[in-house]
Image 1 (cartoon, rainbow, N blue to C red):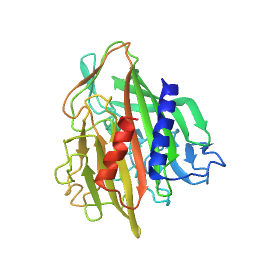
Image 2: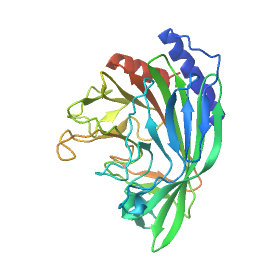
Image 3: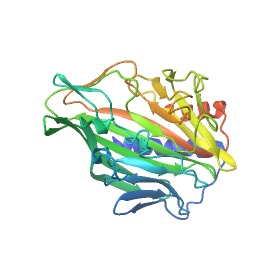
Image 4: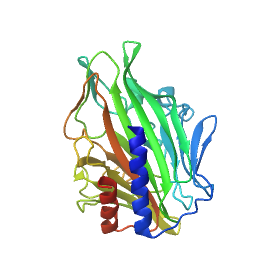
Length: 325
């Protein structure tokens, strides 16, 4: 499955590069730099694009240790070096850059929460790297995550996730980050991801982005004023970056559950009027998703990380290339 994914990824990249008319320097390889706490993916020129944390990051001093976790992306940077993600903000200590937990889980007659980890009903843990890869076209890794529930002092693993991340550069201002999530129930029964307003692939944006200097645009033409709950192929979150601008184009694949996917967008007056940016592709925002024991489920997303402007028609063309290579 992952070999086919890699081939399709290369085909998509080739189409995008040809369409953009760009010739990238392939004299050296992308790289995966492993450290004691993080894996960093870099371009052939040595620019760090993203870091994945594989050891538990404790919360700030004085905060309940249950808010610590691993298995997330931060920092995610543009090619110009601007950081787009934020972790452990004081308003939501459980927010971790780009991460992928589920909020309302029904399992054997009880409900659990693996998103709001401070409630101590469950969490997600890094297990191991199933793969790392680097060559002239891309770099990436496959991390194994176990999803645990807490019940009367006992822990039980109810689901295993393989989270495969791959990056490649489109041109001097943009690169792609593909996220391929495979979910397999591992307990004694089905896992039901219950309908709830958020859950799944989440993005907490940089602290500097508020309702004064950042925007949202979706494939249906909605903005931050009316995008929450809309059904989308893609959504763009962007804002000021120093003297310029940039952001992330989030693409959902047509094979994903409940596509086009509902999105969770924070209101403009959230967080005491600051209007911090939070985005979430949430396939369970308007319906349950039953993961049956013995079966495998997948979700595919592509992030286009960009400096400068991006127009809606270009975002749609990029999504078409991703959806129909």
